[in-house]
Amino acid sequence: MHQDMESVLEQLRAKGLRLTPQRVEVIALLYQLSHPTAEQVYSLMAKKFPYVSQTTVYSTLKLLKDQGIVNELTYGDRSSHFELTEDEHAHFNCKVCGGIYDVDVKEAEKLNTMIKTDEQFEVDFVRVEFYGTCKACLTA
Amino acid sequence: MHQDMESVLEQLRAKGLRLTPQRVEVIALLYQLSHPTAEQVYSLMAKKFPYVSQTTVYSTLKLLKDQGIVNELTYGDRSSHFELTEDEHAHFNCKVCGGIYDVDVKEAEKLNTMIKTDEQFEVDFVRVEFYGTCKACLTA
DNA sequence: TATTAATTTATAATTATTATAAAAAAGTAT
DNA sequence: ATACTTTTTTATAATAATTATAAATTAATA
Image 1: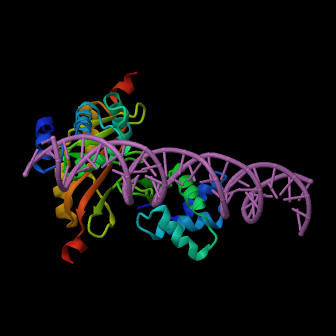
Image 2: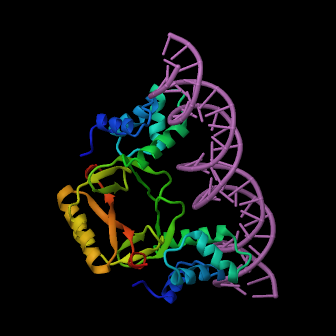
Image 3: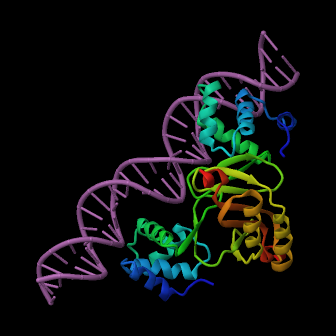
């Protein structure tokens, strides 16, 4: 799991970054949503902050990414998706509903060491994305 | 390995698609280059076809993708990269030189079946991207 | 060689994202 | 509390990759 929201806020404070209401709301939304795009975060922010700008959302997400708090996922289609950083895991992308699911893949670590010995590459991390149909869409 | 160029051309002919010089050149470049962007293909095309348009390169790449002949890879940074379709494999992305290497990962198939049984997702394919430093850059 | 449909081209449009600079707000010192 | 300094937000414009459009060209074929 990922760290709780309070420690994220504390982490920013410790870096001398300001905890503006907009930033807190972006962070709160990242806890509520599943792999949202910047646009989705922006849309939902409008409920509490009717005058928030897209730029603020983009810059906050970028800030959080630079701090290692969020992870940016890019796919073939348009926008990036964002998630709170947590233990290395894979994603499953459903071609029917478009949903993105977290998937625990312990095997990924084995891949890391394997490639290291075989190919003499130094691996920092590995990204694993599955594509197919999720359970809900299979039974629907 | 991927199929040879003649069979790619034949595949297009069989579908009633025209083998224009531009298309043949795009295909030839895909055989010569390693995971190029559309822009890179376009730049190199200019040697033989000074008047070729970017649109032609984009539409040809899209056509080849729709035919299953090329595979489009998207990364966080700007443009898509393209490769000829071949047996499922992983990529290694070097953060130093920016190079993209094909990596044979037989383990990926195991991941497929694993997730299928564990999570009851139906997996079509899996994309595995390693990030780190390649051998050449480590020793340089 | 003429015909017809596919393809290429030039151009403009689109979309996600980033740059810029002024206005507003946060944190700090007085 | 108040003024000051710096960060952050905002509005706006710019950028960059890609796609849409429509006219001109060309490949395949009759």
